Amino acid sequence: MIEFHGKTVLVTGGGAGIGRATAQAFRQWGARVAVIEIDEARVADLKAAFDDAGAEALVVHGDVNDATAVSALATQIEQRFGALDILVNNVGDFLRIAKPFERYTDEDIERLYAVNLRQLFTVTRAMLPLLKRTGGGSIVNVSSIEGFRGIPNCAVYGAFKAAVNGFTQSLALELAPAGIRVNLIAPETTETPQVPVSQVVAPEHQSQLPRWIPLGRFGTPQDMADAILFLASPRASWITGTALHVNGGALAAAGWYRDPKGIWTNMPVITGNGMNL
Image (cartoon, helix red, strand yellow):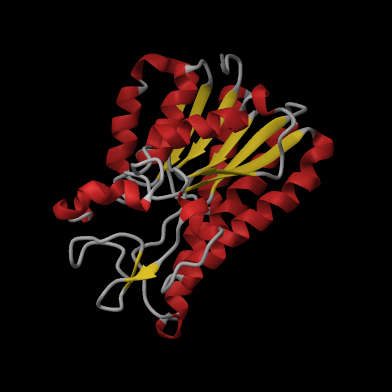
């Protein structure tokens, strides 16, 4: 059994999808949970879900790219819980920016940098003093399968996800003497509000799922939460600087291909809504 009684966890972007499933799973297994979420409606909904947690839960409306807000969150965690045992850097998104690299603007690149890498630096740096206070802890970053393979027309996103992998490995070495482990999960497509897979795969292609992903389905937020909890738990006490691939076999089996129209795809989708690149 994996349980987290007496532990304090911070999950960024914990209001929906992978982040919410992770926050709820940690709470289910006894942890004190802090969440920062940019969407006010999701903040209200998560507060309601954690209503019976009382002082064991802290849900804050804020932007992880706002250094002032992140610093204030660190202060709140310190005042409420005293220290931090586990940090889950969950925030990230490709922002529907998919086009040939030569058409990327400086603004496109900056937006992708902010949400996929800069905030990771901001949050981790702010929380390290609280993590070091426990004499050992765990950081789990959420990367992507696209950090380990090419993704056509999303070169900037892919580059930043690959950078998350490099940051994870290097920080793992740096923090090992402090007893802080640093790992990541690398999901394939997961059914979330950001990526509603069931809505973009054309009905006539639903039966083809086993041909795209060896285990026959896309991921769920719970799949990712389970992997995060494992890496954060004592069961992974000798694992650091490692990527856990949570992708149903997709990385081992496949990649991108051109459809009969010459469009890059990793699955046939409803025209105009999916990841045809």
